[in-house]
Every structure is written in structure tokens, then in C-alpha cells.
Length: 316
Image (cartoon, rainbow, N blue to C red; front, side, top):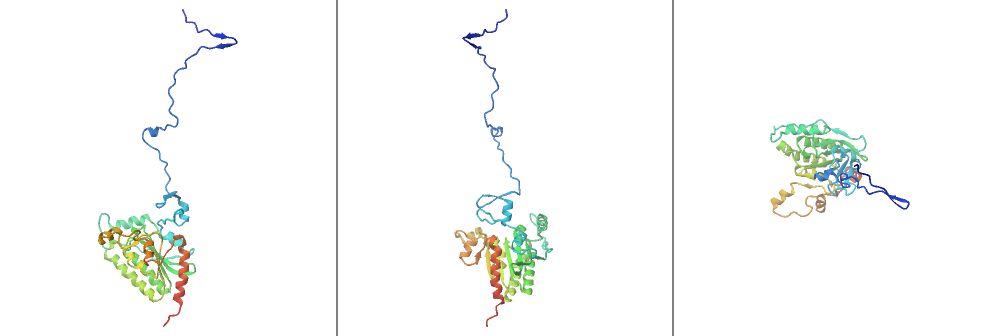
């Protein structure tokens, strides 16, 4: 006999349906659950290269375009990033006034230096990396304000701004040309020192550049040395430290040997801030600390004074 469906019960005007249990459904995943977290993996949002830079001082994220417009100075904390030689030249000289000298001069492996990597292969690699640089310095004649002058700017991105025979020769030629034309000289230094791959030839550049500057000074022509981070070793021990006026960017490392070498040699604790521009300013080695954004204005002011002195008649 077929099973009869349950009868509908009525109470008053309402009818009551019999309770029916709904079928079981598969459980839904918890709200907001991410399978990647369950497996122990996290998704990182990748920031495209060339858009943002993290400041190593204040850790702020800076839009690269804003950083370039601010001459590679952090707008939050004034940290000075490294800047290339040509970028620095363009920030100082008047538009289209710079005439580069000895642009095609490049170093060669005179000694046949061999090691983990040969000197020749290093030079080739750095020249391919930077199509606009043949060596670690760019020299030429330009105009800052109303002053025509010789300008030499080192670039740390080429072999750590090390001074080899080409760097010394280019700077010497610049100084001698300015002496001949009665022009002031500005050299902006950033260097790890003499280039070890060239041995004694690199050390000879210390005396050669200083000799050219001594002759330049005899003609009562000004020489301004600007120190940037870092300026050390053979460069600091030669032309970088003999300026009529020595300027420096804030918080740059300035010195001859590294702090560890000095500490091990002297067996003494080094004072706080050792080998910074602020430390050396207090002790008289540096004449002024000039932020990069103020450099051009200050140079014009200094040149106005120094060239007035040069043109003044000799006494006695």
C-alpha cells in the first residue's frame, strides 16, 4: 500500500504545513580567508623600478621625478643622494655654456694588471655601463652666473671615482688652460682615492695636479674645492684639500684612511662624527657646508669676492 502524504492541518483560517528538514549543503569558506595565507605564502605588491626611491636616512618613499627635480636631495630630511657628474654640471652652469675638454681621453692598462678581474675588462664594463663617461672625471670651461671658469667634476659611479693617470691629466690640463686664460677653477671631488690598478702612475697624479694648482695660485687666480660624499685617500691628500676656499656638502665622509684603519693604527677610540663635514668644519679644515640646492647661488657670491681680490692691485 502506497504511503500517503501528510495531511494539512487547519486551525481557524490558517493552514500549517508540516516541517520539512532542508538538505545539507557543503560548508562555505570563512569570510575573508585567503588560500595563500593558509599555505604560508604572502603576496607582495611589487613596485615597478624607476618610480620610487626609499631614503636611507628617513626611510620615506620619494617619487623619482620629484627626487630628480630636487637635485637628488630628499625633500623630507635633506639627505644628499649620489649624483652623476653631468647632472651636477647641468645644475651649476648656465644653459649651453659648458664646453667639455678631452672628452675622448680614456685610460689604458699600462701595467697589464691581472687579478680576479683584469683592469682592461673592468674599464670596458664601466664604459658600457655609462655611455657618457670615458673615465671618472668630466672637465671643461663653463659659465656660472657672470663668471667664466674651469670646472672639473668627478663621478663616483666610474670605478669609485678613483684617480688614475687620465683623471690627473685631464685635471692638470684644465688647470693649466685656466691659468693661461686667467680663469678661476672649481673642482668637485668624490673619490675612493688613487687607482690601484695603475700603481705608481696614479700616485704621481697627486704631485702633478698640486704643481699645476701652485702655478695657478702664483697668478692670483682662485681655486675652489668642493668635497662631496665620499672624498678620501689620494684625492683628499692632494688637490681636494689645497683650495683657496674649501666647501662641502652636508654629512659627507671626508678623510684619508678609513675609520677602522685609523682606529687600529692609533689604538684609540674615535670621537663621534669622525670624518664628517660637520666634524671637520668645527676643526677648521672646511670653510663652509653648502647644501646642494644652494651651491650655485653661493658659488656666484664667492666668485664675486675672489675675482675682486684677484683684480685688486698688489701692495708692496
